[in-house]
Length: 75
Image (cartoon, rainbow, N blue to C red; front, side):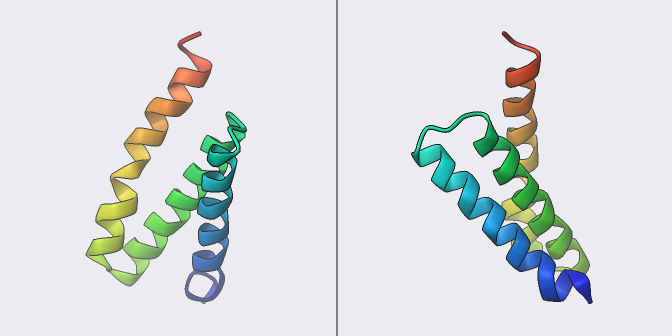
């Protein structure tokens, strides 16, 4: 129930906030917010068995892992 009712909107808000922060060049919080939204949408796609959502957001997860690793490991 929570996933269908709230997780989509929370995830959408996080993705949009991450995009806004990227456009405002506010780094690295942009990556964290956007990646949380992507994880939420991936969970939503998995629960609803929507392959398009899983493909779109699921494939973004490794890209965010690379970005987060760059923040903490490659300095």
